[in-house]
Length: 267
Image 1 (cartoon, rainbow, N blue to C red):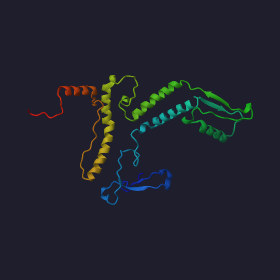
Image 2 (image 1 turned 90 degrees about the vertical axis):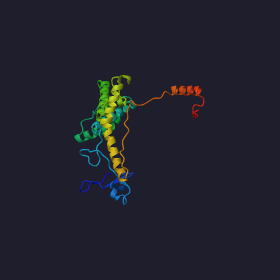
Image 3 (image 1 turned 180 degrees about the vertical axis):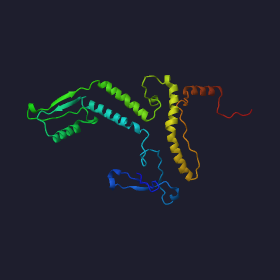
Image 4 (image 1 turned 90 degrees about the horizontal axis):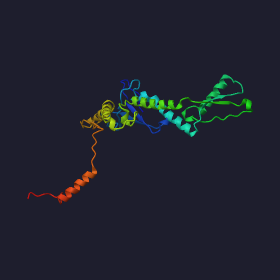
């Protein structure tokens, strides 16, 4: 964890623990922030590498923070469908109690109890168990059918995928195996090549620069003035070797020139 800033706005100490969940009882280790002038006194130091984040000085927000709600929605939709299947695809319903109208506080308590038991994606499809003295006081439960549920789920699925892709600045969903129109790889090779290069330049390279800049700072303190870099990745530069053709070529060479690996004299 990060310590507080000093009067100059710098963080001097960081703290490490394996059990922060213990709160104030957690045992932790103090680590000095990166300062080569104090490495003899504090050999273990922390270099904090981060991107600028408005409103988050100590812990910057991830670059995909804009898609956070849709990521949560994706998790909840998946949990909802799983719970529906596990609980027999039971629909939503209305519960009407026929034994009078209780006080407002009691009504709110009953409502909260039902919501705790049946609300949320993890509780989809669960049943409600009631007890009564007779038919006149039996709660009335009315199922609420969800109209066009298939279309709503289809819309949510596409919208979630689209928003998560946008939040991660994905140039083309095809780069990550998402193919909306059903076209094959052969029909979109040029699109993939352009998208891969653009994604690398606009998204990947800025993170690479942050890593290499930080490593260069550390290595320069040890007298290693190297210019580190990442080898660019080209999706379409992979070379495939025809293994069968190579085997046949080797056999032909062996038959035509016996001892082909031997050194040939000038004679």
